Image (cartoon, rainbow, N blue to C red; front, side, top):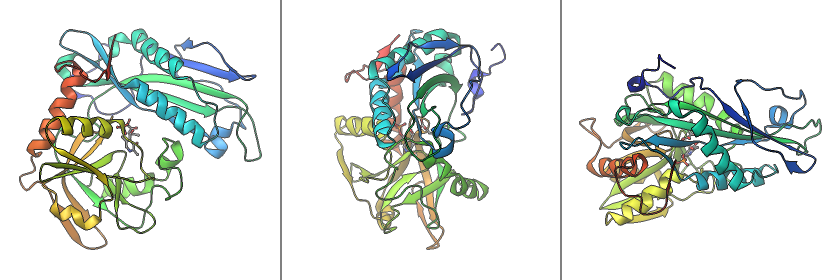
Length: 338
Ligand code: PLP
Ligand code: COI
């Protein structure tokens, strides 16, 4: 704890003091239990490890100039975890209990919420999974919810800086009628090879096209995509991408800044026309895109010639972070102050 270098945190795991667990047995969720261990026991036939019956969430808490801690839109994450449970036939974790657990785990680990000046945050990771034993492919009868936190810095190296992305048609992250809209581990397992390939080639991540036709933009790595042109915020409408809470928030903020907002199919060739482009998500916040190289078509779409983030991306970033850290008023009830 004494050794944490708040100003140079990466997006990685650091041990904190406590985590929370909750068990579903005999048709009922138990009480929230606090643990100081980083481990738990699991049945060798748990459905989570055999058949991927699991989902996770990611949200953040921020320390303001006033020293207060603010949690961003945790009700949305609670709801999305319920949607993921529905999509994987898991028992839903009650929303109120989810939010109670988030507040509790932050209070227990208060000293790990990075100071305001560091511009770092506390990443909160809830996980829900089938813990009951089955050998046939069917949903478990028992479930476990766990919740841990870890202080994090930027997801992509350098923070608010542009980085390059790569289109490669040989990989899909999710199927058109599949699980892409849920936050389930399998989607991330499916993205590992592509992500490694992109990293090895010097890119931030892979840029996925729709799996059926490879004509439209889906999302980029573990983040949604947006493009900016003619004072318009444009973001893909797709049934195979994760409905990003950050993107949903940016659409509101863009509108309030007097921009038009379009959520629609975005053909890959349209990349040519964007003045700015970015990846957005809880971990990514806004990660402005320097350029997107199309590996198969041997083409390059450049959004930033000087490598600097565009003015609208910067404005959106400042506004979003302003609300999260409490520098700007929270006019939408997005923030829970502890
Ligand atoms: N898309 C994927 C695949 C993700 O993993 C994430 C991260 O949660 C996002 C988009 C961004 O979603 P959110 O803004 O809710 O964090
Ligand atoms: C997030 O943005 O919260 C993510 O889940 C991204 C990644 C760490 C999976």
